[in-house]
Image 1 (cartoon, helix red, strand yellow):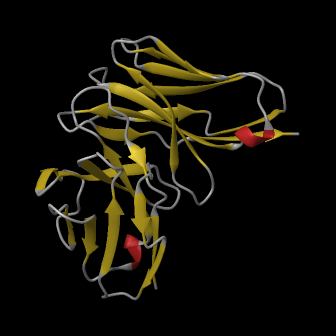
Image 2: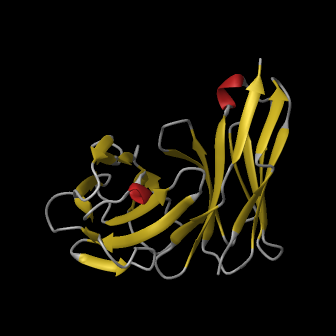
Image 3: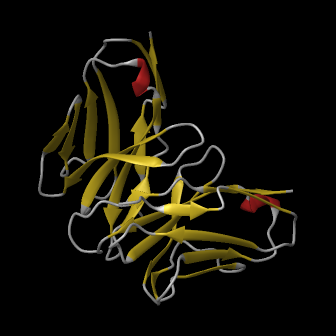
Length: 112
Length: 115
């Protein structure tokens, strides 16, 4: 059974700092991996999708890497801003339906 | 192109009542997924549907829960005889197709409170 773990559960950093969020999964037979952002009481916003054949994806200040063989992904956020404060969720898609299996998230607080 | 729409955004039901949650996928998307987020828990997959077909319902509780995605109209998640443990945020996601690296786009969710 696929399990997704995110470390740390919470992170507080000063504005401007570069940071890394970690995600690990137990079964490497995945189709892709998605990183999401969730604001309190809101839905999920897709940030990046990495196909299983890819090693990384970049969007603006965000860079996500995937090491499928070791079951790990990282989300790198450069020059963090207070507006980046949110919960970041990692999810892997698996099975014929490509349903997503989520981690519990990392709650990020960027202090001005 | 409007995003995934869910209604109602908030729903309050008394124990024993029925809850109906609606999801309209993005235009051009024919695949719908339902997920549930319990308090202090991660999101859990419930069911995956295509038009008029349930493809994967491995995450659905065996009783009281059902889902449909008719040829016309939104996808419906129905919970009969709700209990307090059903209180959660229910999210719908849509995708253009199931194969390939297609992102799932999420709606804003329906927050169900059972009193």
